[in-house]
Structures are given as structure tokens and as C-alpha cells.
Length: 179
Image (cartoon, rainbow, N blue to C red; front, side, top):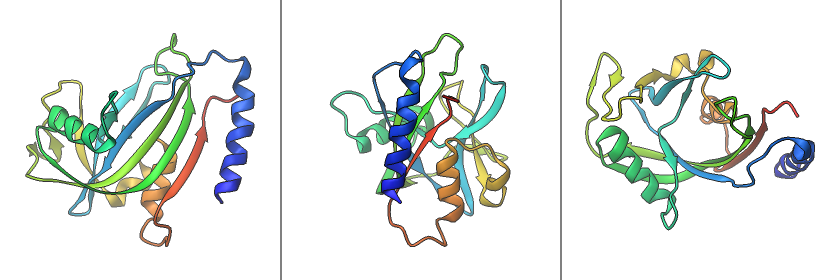
């Protein structure tokens, strides 16, 4: 399966040769936090496409920072809680149009880790408090996952199938530039 994904990657990258492209790959670490049958997500809105979507908590890995350190920092900044980071379980590579019209194509490599908050999150009625005003964290019941726009689509598929899969680590490539 990995060879097929690599072939698809080569084909899609060739299509991008004449599009504006930022050659920098962004390294991102994200946490899969599941408690009481619900997944912690950040709900957002893409002004460029006018779509609502959810993403898992985490963020960019800074220079000289490990992925685990990035997750600890992001959870302290965004949720004011320490995090117990466990095994990496999924890798996603995505090429997609930027969120704003003037953005170039983005190329992200995202490492997903199973994780558990070390303490309780501040929440009310399923909405989780964040010190960062632009964040909109909430608990998404796993039963609602199929009808939710969780991005990238590959992580949604992985989460929906993880109980029935024997794979311990999965890689997925997605190109949504239309190239």
C-alpha cells in the first residue's frame, strides 16, 4: 500500500510544477485525545472556501523543538493543560491551497500521536475553554465523526477504521489543489 501512495505522491507533485508553490514543508504535530467516547477537536471556518471544518489540537513544530515538545507547548498555550504523549500512530502529508486567496499552495507533513491530558480541561456544555480567543475547542462524540468535516480526510478515515484495523502506523497522501 505504501508503494501505491508514493506513486500517487510523485504523480500529484508533477502536476503542481506550474502552480505558485512555497517549497517549504511545514512540520506539524497533532494529538488524538479521546475521552468518554468523544474526540477533542478545534472547530474553525475557512474564509476562502466558506467551509466549516475541524482539526485535531496541536500545531507547528518550531526550529530545534521535537514533535513531543511542540505538543506540550501547544497544549499549554491553547488549553492550559499538561499532556501525556504516547505513541505516534499516523502520518499525513497534504498539499492544498492556502486558507487565504493570496496564499501559495501549502505542503504539510503532520505526525499524529495518541495523547491524554494530565489534568481536567476547563469546559462547559461540551465547549472547552482556551486562553486563545480564536480557538474553538469542543468534544466531538465519535458517533458524529462520519458526518463531520474533520481535516485532513485521511485522519478522519483512520479514526473511523482504527478499531477494525491491524495496522500500527499508517501514512496517507492527499492533494486537494485540483492540479
